[in-house]
Image (cartoon, rainbow, N blue to C red; front, side, top):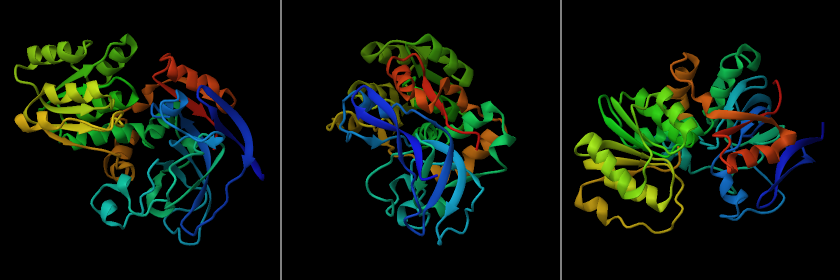
Length: 349
């Protein structure tokens, strides 16, 4: 097969499926992967809505699971036939960033960003370390398990990165800003790390219910100063840790205000404003850290085992499913908030 079907961005608000050339091994560190499942990310809505720029006729997507079809000459730990998580990050595993546990900031990633995950085949770079092997083959897993494994390509790992960056520990009180898929995975992560009280900020009933199922103990629907007031009424002095999973100016501002003195804000919401006043951090000794998730590191060390053991089930964030031919519907469902996260079933593997 020399061609394949893939989702293509045409213009804001318009997605299409085109026949495109099948990718090939270009570097000895590459792998060619047949995609089993992919999905739409909240960050994809930025260019879909025209908020950020994206080149017309470009391939899209950055989250998938699939089966390796071919590997380059330098790939020794991954082989054809392996079932793998395909992270949006491409960590090499040996640069200073990867060795420090921040593979999202790998110094040897290919320039140009991601694209092509929402299609039948994908060329993945830095495959030897960046890909995460899943035991067995797709047919060994239930539909629910496959969905949870898919979240490990980005959304669950990003939620966990928020919790790890905020230094959530046993017995903590945690506030989670954002009720999208990342925020909901942040709730899972806070519970996984031992938080005793988890306050989810959400105004949508379906997301509130899922947050409670995932481990939230309290729901606050208010925003801005009213939200801060509610958190203080519940906690007395503010949260030990705050997970910022939105990226708006209001969300970041609220995150800083709901933490107690000395709290840490774990920020994974992609910044939607270039400037931010950090003086408020100074006056209350609030820490701010976070950024691009360490997908491969956290999957290999914690998250894959947590999914395989049934300890966590983040795949429940997929509330609508589509095939590739209905890619426009998948984006519209996310855009109109009729889906928390849209699943794309590409193949059986």
